[in-house]
Image 1 (cartoon, rainbow, N blue to C red):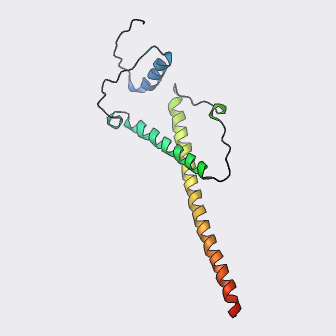
Image 2: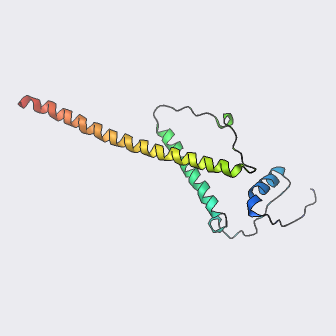
Image 3: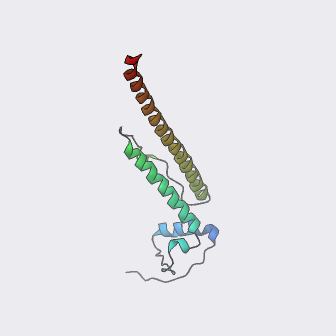
Length: 140
């Protein structure tokens, strides 16, 4: 085993994400949580955690909607997609854009679900009215 040193790094908030990502990708650094008793929602980055949780929730919603479909929907493999930029000055903007796109798609899908429900109910009402008219036509 190689010799190790324990150091504390104080990293400015503005560059913390990029710095930690770069250090982690080197594979020579092990991070120790100095506040293990603090849960994630008590930490200073709680807003980002909630935002990512919301993005994950939206993604799970999309998956559930896809699985409900009777006809299979072809989904392009993730490996065929352009990689997300997770490091550098563009990383925050990429995450903002992804969050915005997920929000737009969620709103559109919710609207489509509501429209489908309304149309289904209207169809049932019209079929019922047609049957009533057919059955009562013998009296007129």
